[in-house]
Length: 297
Image (cartoon, rainbow, N blue to C red; front, side, top):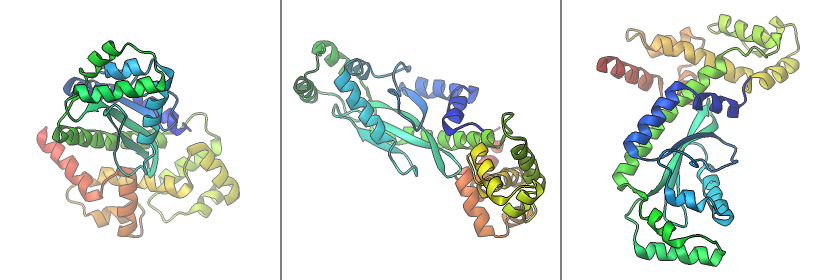
């Protein structure tokens, strides 16, 4: 099974992400990156609409280290929502988490923007800091780049973050669908277990049932299944059931409680909790969002 970083890489190469990245960059004139949790380079480097000031700063070891530290701070949130930080130059970066179930596997990141118009006084402070750091850089060229930084009003910035949150939820669903696909490199037992779970997902099955059907101990099954899928049996079963529930929620004549029991949940409260963990919204919100999209077609 793909690791979280592999799933993020697969999504970043998908047409849906490329189309969104293009639309986002064209409309906001800001860079956008989708990256895994692990940090190994500057997220915006080489991106369309990357801030020329930040590009110049990244060429220097001391300032590059400072930018990497900002990127690290952006992604050290608890994963419940967007996180924004401001660098020493007064430029903001924001990261929105992408989830696989309740785990954060990556971030949509944008920024390198100012929330107020750059001024000479602010640049004077930046130049002083760079001199103290011993940074060798063309200050006149840097000043020109600084004054070409993208500026958004607080209202525009809030709206931009909302767009990222909406798309991050969509990408979380895509990640979940990738995870549910069978991997050809998986052990045969895990492939059989996946098929068994899909075939019996509406039944009150548990770990012991599946391990017995695979003719192995529960300990061995847990170890192999988690290693191959990155999820426990309970987490995987929940996601299979939620994917089935999503299809049934498209039928407006079916009650949510009816769907919950039909896909295998014994409690409506449990169903609502797992659905929100997997889909990032409640079953009712999911149904309403799909209905709204149908009306706009």
